[in-house]
Amino acid sequence: MFLPIASPVAATEITRGKELQQVKREAAWSPDKQYKVENIPYLSRLQDGHIGHLFLVRKGVRKRLPVKLEDANGYDHVVEVLWAPNSRAFAVNLWDPGLTARSYLYDVNDLGHRIDIEERFKHLINDKYQKGFFNYAASTIGPKVLAVKWINSGWIEIHLEDTKELGSSSAEIKDFLLTYRWNLKDKLIFEPGKADKTYLVPASPP
Picture 1 (cartoon, rainbow, N blue to C red):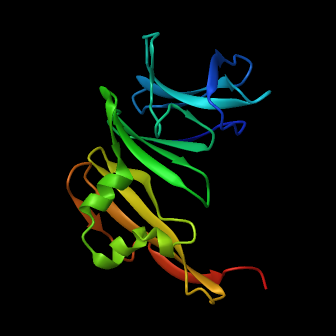
Picture 2 (picture 1 turned 120 degrees about the horizontal axis):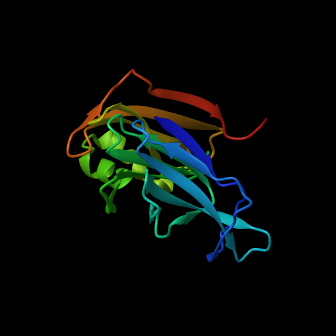
């Protein structure tokens, strides 16, 4: 199950901790309807601004468990939640389209030990060419490693996306999208030809 949750107003300051009741909440329910990942906006230090926080809520239980993103719970970008078919785990993509992205894996019974999917991906990848995508100095935007969908409860499809300049004087950039399967542990399988693409686009309008 996939559901995007968008923070309604961008705000980068830390929160005051006051929940905003008048702003609509959004939630991504697990397939078995026993859990939901809920977006709750909180007032920030910015005037009339707020920032989203994610919580895991179990059906019939009032206590909300914080879903930690990056080094804080709050976020001001776009969040995508992808539930495993068995409702035992979920992946979260925290991203700003076209810019930066982070992807995390959570176990509903152990939120405190999330897995940074990009860090695990870099540890498992062994192809020198593909590892080269993480040379940030040569990258226009920086590589993004995102969970795309659950193949089944034990495997996730992952995309590696990147945009690189073709030389300092070139008028073109090169976009990449490569597809992998990951078993949530120690196995990463590259799937050439499935959704990967390499194409040239103008670096700037003519």
